[in-house]
Length: 171
Image 1: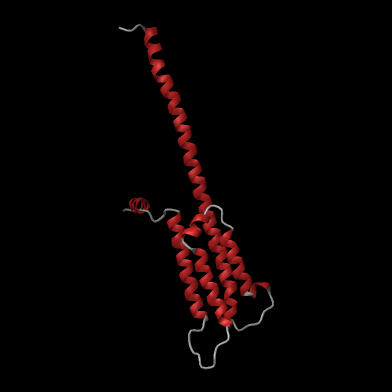
Image 2: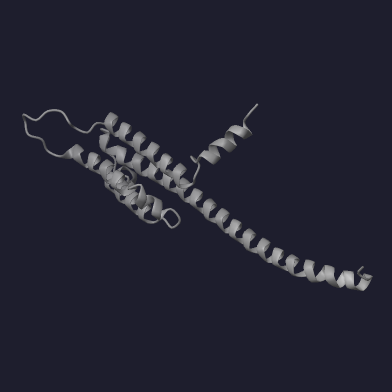
C-alpha cells in the first residue's frame, strides 16, 4: 500500500508531464486551426472582391455594344479589359486557384469576343458577329464558372460540407 506522500508523488509524476504535453498539443492545434480559418476567411474575401470587380469590368466592357456616345472613362471597354487582367493577377490567397482553373484564359476569351465587335468584315461575310446578347450569355457563363471555382477552392462542394448542410437543415 502506498503512503499518502508517495501516492501524491506518484500521481503528479504521471499527471504533470501528460498535462504539460496536452497543453502544448492543444496550443499547436488551436494555432493551426486559427491559421486555417484566417486563410479561409481571406480566400473568401478575395473571391468576393474579385467577383465584384470583374462584374464592374464586364459592365464597362458592355459599352462597346451600346449605341450611345460617351466620353466618360467608364465607357471605354479597353479599360475594363485591362482592369480585369490586373484583378486576376493581383491575388494573394487565391492565385493558385486562378492559375489552376485557367481563369485568365477565360477572361482572354471574353475580351477577344468584345474586340471582334469592331473588326472590319468582307462584304460577302455574314454572321458570327459579336452581339450584346452573345456578350451577356458569355458573361453569365463566366460568372457561373467563377462562382463554381470559388466554391471548389473553398471546399464548399465537398461531400462532408453537403452532408453537414443536409444534417443542419433536416426537419
